[in-house]
Amino acid sequence: MNSLLPATEVIAAMLKARAHTVAVSESSSGGLVSAALLAVPGASAYFMGGAVVYTRTARSALMAITDADMVGIRSSSEPYAQLLAQRLHQRFGTTWGIAETGAAGPRGNSYGDAAGHSCLAIHGPVCLSRTIETGNNDRLANMRIFTSALLGLFREALDKAP
Image 1 (tube, rainbow, N blue to C red):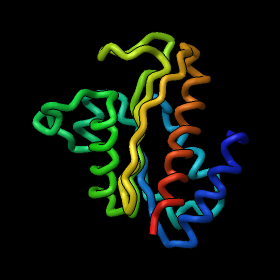
Image 2 (cartoon, rainbow, N blue to C red):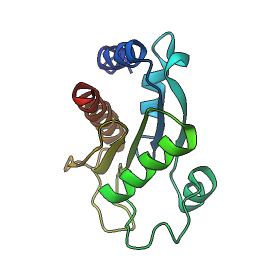
Image 3 (cartoon, rainbow, N blue to C red):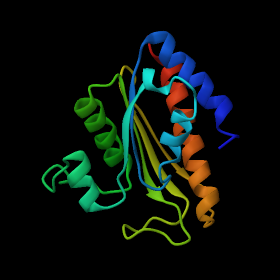
Image 4 (cartoon, rainbow, N blue to C red):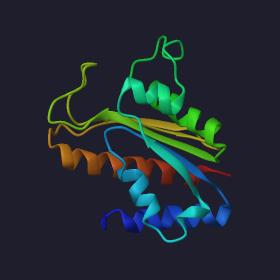
């Protein structure tokens, strides 16, 4: 967690200065993104909520994403990550929705992705998505990498935002 704090503190300062808010959906990062954002004092000014959306049941119950919403979209993909981020933005009424979905390891997921695969998305004044492949099956290392990558993509979006 300590290695994430410098980047998270910069993000928090940017969010506070702009009076922006964020909601988070995570799967393979297991809540580390939310924990990093909440570790900064004053997080209540920008952090509105989050969920670990790890299963189809969680997707339905927490995000109100139905099977009909998923037609043509594969889980653990950039379009799915974008759907999660957009849904957060709408449901929480935040400036930003940020999402991560993937396979931390030690094995891949049921969709055919190898361990170390993660799709990230940002939805707000700037929308971005990215897929990363670590080539690693170390679950904890991948969770940290996914967390850092989503925070990095969020910072990139904040830098591009008006």
